[in-house]
Image (cartoon, rainbow, N blue to C red; front, side, top):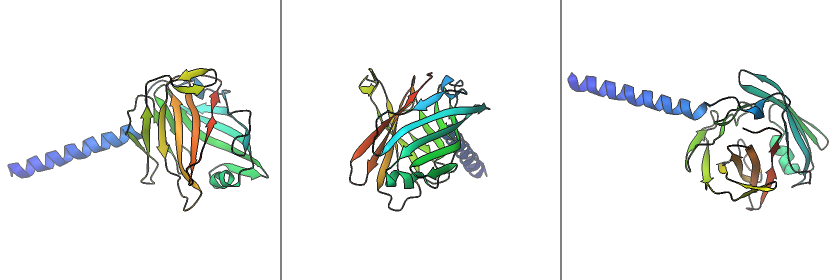
Length: 213
């Protein structure tokens, strides 16, 4: 009887710890980031990169710590256009791709997406290499692959420290894309998104936000 009780308690504690781990993997702490305030704008390079230009977004609403974005870009790259075609809130008119109702949580701890099949933690700034974040109910994860702690990433006129998080494409059987890498910095938030294609060529889209942590 004593052994049975010990086993029951041990299993209960194991399940409790597992639940706590999963909760911490899907929630963000920290204070509200100024980057998530209404009116903050987000843009990429003014140059055309891999068939994408005029990319910009703006925070249109902030409620309960969740920022709602509207965004648009000119996309002539058919592969990238197809990648986002079925994403919630996306409309495509010729080469102009627009999205409304995109929900993002930004705190001083990190960034979390709440929209679409890729919902979940994008990055936690204090994470370590090999840490993972679950991606919705897909069974896939985002994985921290780099955190050098050295000012070695070119960002505008600066060199900054970054943490880089990889994920595989979601819901694609043969989309031509091998992986995405999110590049982030604790002060400037998301500073770039790298797309690695099946042939292992890469393109990085820089991201600039009009506010910072």
